[in-house]
Picture 1 (cartoon, rainbow, N blue to C red):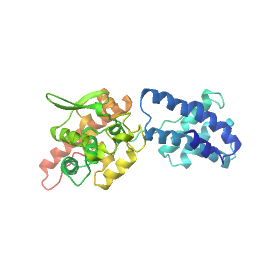
Picture 2 (cartoon, rainbow, N blue to C red):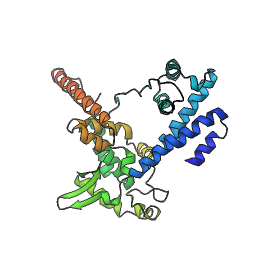
Picture 3 (cartoon, one colour):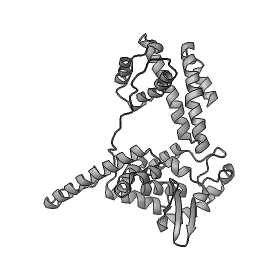
Picture 4 (cartoon, one colour):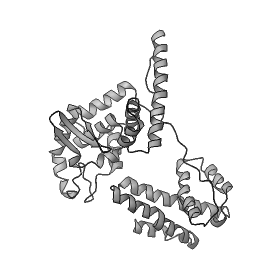
Length: 309
């Protein structure tokens, strides 16, 4: 990360460097080091870290264009920044720089806007969901590693990066079947997926890669020694095979949120408890709409019904 930081600051104005370097080193990167002591530092976490620094630099450049001084930052300036960026989620990342500066008394106390919460809107209908899951479980034209990842996303709605972080010790068999540890809890695998897991463990694809990451024993070893496979590569590959990762994940989460409490959702999905509560509330509201639609459809021949909006 340090070489990347040095490179991005190389052509920046000195007054930007004087602010961004301590912000990056003593806030953003320090936070990453602390987090990496508790869990593995994934490529996605690295991308998020770089993004926060990049947004901070864009904000400082925008202030220069407005002839504004960072030390004299006002609430109205923050509001203008969000407005000119159309309220895009990335613009709200400036809150990390502003919060750090307030804590260091570099600027006056400001109200730091939170990233607006957006409800999921894209879901698979029942037929599409069943077809994609069937293909992951049975389509031999799709490589075994993608089939396993796709099946776990479709069944449990967990992020790809969480799947790729699984170690070989996170999957085990008992007398009643095969289990995988997700969110720190054992989850029973359907028999067909358990067969795929066993097939993956002994596949040529995995055996040819195991030496690169043997120290970590990742189930999906990456090209970098001691690191799991890249989540972006897997997401793009699954999408090319017709497995709509984001939409499939939303669909699985909606179904699970109907039956599981928020605390379990938080552990399983790897999200904050507040996010899990929102999913449960959203699922219950969507389910009530679905029941109403089913009742209407049953009285009106020829109108199709779908659980997902």
